[in-house]
Image: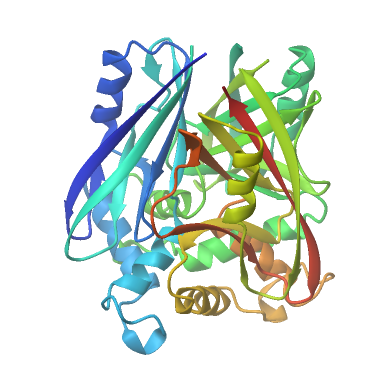
Length: 139
Length: 139
Length: 139
């Protein structure tokens, strides 16, 4: 059994989906992983991880709009206000999505569907440095 | 350490929850898995995986209704419109739920609660062929 | 490869977030785990598991309020009514969050961000006994 860890740092600049599928694929290739699981965890609670369609960029716009409408940036709705108008909505959006995803590796390739990409979903409006930890456990 | 993969194909016919707990249990039994993890991932972004109550079928009806109300099929709300009125809502519902779940196997049995079942949650309204990949890693 | 299981029972008393990060950390320390994955699964469908900020308790209040507003306890909205006014909303909230989370262990420590804690999110209003199963797979 083999285990490897990798710290992936992403700089974000506002509410968007930031794809990092290729960074993971590159890691799998560089390390010559064959079969195993990769646990992917974001070390923050105001951004999240999602698997989404990587074909039409309009999907991402609609996602961001939907979540902004569902969880409005409106101070009158919340009591946790000290970190900015976008902070409590960011925590809620993070809870509605995921902080952690496990991906399988089979025959040296990531097990993702044809149209699936892996994204950091940034919920804060100002620049952030985000840390995602990749952990491989396999052969 | 032992690893096994299995492609589970499910044909869906409209917005419903499709249980596949027994297919996984059968796989665990046939392969004589003892202790390990099964990573379950759906290779699509317009259907999802959830663990829900398998006792009262009304739970499933209420779930479907809730998600349809929360994420309406209304073209005026979205910009991604090319694949049908139900497609963008399906992507959003998939983001609000899960594409991936890890289940533990202990003493040759799936670690699920008494009332828990594993479901494919189909968000599209027309017939679909769905691929779920099961990946076992254990002893 | 080493595997261990642990049944963690939590008694809940109403809709709140119950942190159990220290119980997991203690288990990791007691068992002298070094590198591996912990699959954490709650064996119920009316409570869930989330990773959230453990600094400001107001975050938790806002989360609970948000989910109660999004999924109202109103019998006229649901058909599954036999188990109380809070039961169907609890199933929906569980679907909107998670029943299962995988955490990585690196160099004998849980891979969590500085402000991240692991919580049981109780959606029922009366006292409950909840079972969470921890499953370690690593070296």
